[in-house]
Length: 414
Picture 1 (tube, rainbow, N blue to C red):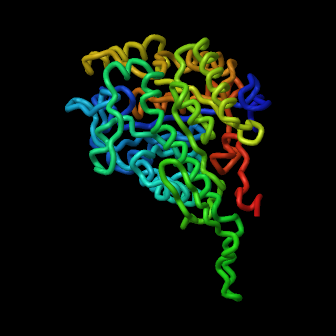
Picture 2: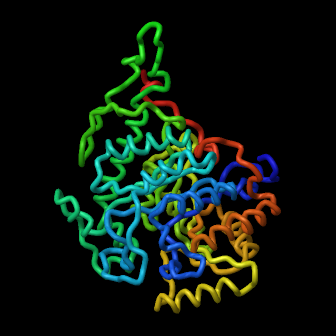
Picture 3: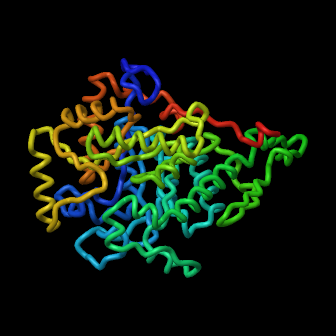
């Protein structure tokens, strides 16, 4: 890797470290919007997001993710709330990513979409269009609808209402939502088939002969699942990456299986190195159960961390404590909450990475403060240690992640 001493396959101590950031509103701390440098009036303005993503690209990050949901944000995982002291309201993640695509050049763009109430065909062509618009930097984070209230926006079905007991146990949640994960896995598979339904050379575009399309290279997918069927083909030709990168977030056995079936990257949420080792073993078991061949289809594993960073020792912890006081409660998260200096975070990342991780997705506690701390302090520290790129070597998200461009399965069998 140019400019670093990192070599070797992903997941090994000598491999290059991958970094992503999760962008959400004014930051992942619910009181971040009240910080002096926050811009709550700009959260629905495209230039605000363009500035954040441009900063991520300045830091040579692999990709950014955009949160999305079918209901307003809520302090509760499983139900809406009536709070008025936290950020509420957001933009459609795919449309936002599409707007940002021509404003950036290298960083990957990974919007979240709901797969429970949204048609698989529309999801597939939306992400395929983003791949064209970004010239090969599109990813996709499929997410099930874990809140029963989301179904009321559509009126076509109901989904399980989680209880307070459910949300205290990630395995119990996963069991209650197992059917939704199974349906979600079918959505991902149908999307992957639709992305393959046009072979790479299906478009001829020969004005002299009047042939725009080779119809024999555009295929009906005839997908028949337990929950839906899709005939295909896609209306969107195959994108620069062939298949956009599929990213998932997983906390328990059922989501690990979901990731093993259809994801290229999975985010996990251990809270220490020992937990990292344990979760990696669970992911490996899910891969074994699903029969995935990691030689043919590698799975990149990132750990999520919610981070507050300051160069001065102790300053980040004091800032978090002040934000907690403003919020009226201590910050809680499914992911490990880290407060400290960029050097201390670099130590943690490299320690956890040695357990077998490929990279990390960092959730900035406050925006833009903690994002710039990542790009302008953490990244240089990692570069000094020879474990992070000093320039982009690829133009696609798959290239950043060291993932090959897959051939259309129809071309292989045809």
